[in-house]
Length: 244
Picture 1 (cartoon, rainbow, N blue to C red):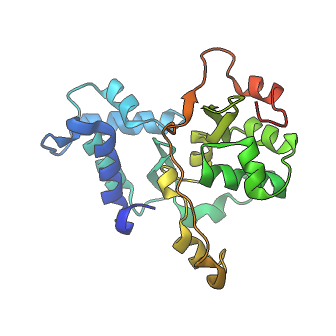
Picture 2: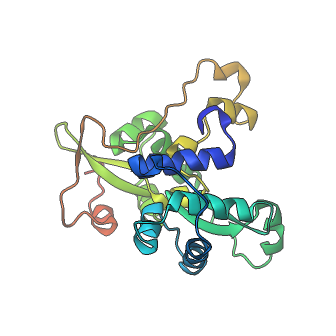
């Protein structure tokens, strides 16, 4: 979760400064109306979330993209449409309290089988993780279908290969997973206290349970995937009991 449960605007500012590095340290003034209108148009018409870097490439080097995004976020607070960060990108979406208005027009998402949901949870919290490690954590053999389904809907992705005999594939979640669940980053995954508050952890057992924090960067024992052939279709065709 965000450090010390900081307010959304402060959290957004922190993330933008992390993304822009030294460029965000310059004096921030009120952005121009033209820059705000241009960003607003791109975010509405783009269809897909846009990163701050992508917006900056369109708006030009003289535009403080962080200030533009924060201006839009403030302008739309409390309105029917809000600017949110999801999966590393920014997009407009309907306010959460108005979700009931779309209940009849939205197609109900297909419910994932229990085995696939458990596999997704293991990957989300333990990434980078190999197929064998998923089976060890769950305590049961992993069916090929669960991994294929998660790859098909784009919620998981091959991350790299473990530097161990056989060089098994490591898996992690994707930006599509973050966007679907409205998570700005892996840091926003619920921690132990959040799970307890939601009633998903028995308080009596929670003290003995550690909720791991996943990493987005390659681990020290991971190596990057080779260029060429490393597509989701390739990995679906090559899933075997060793996850290679």
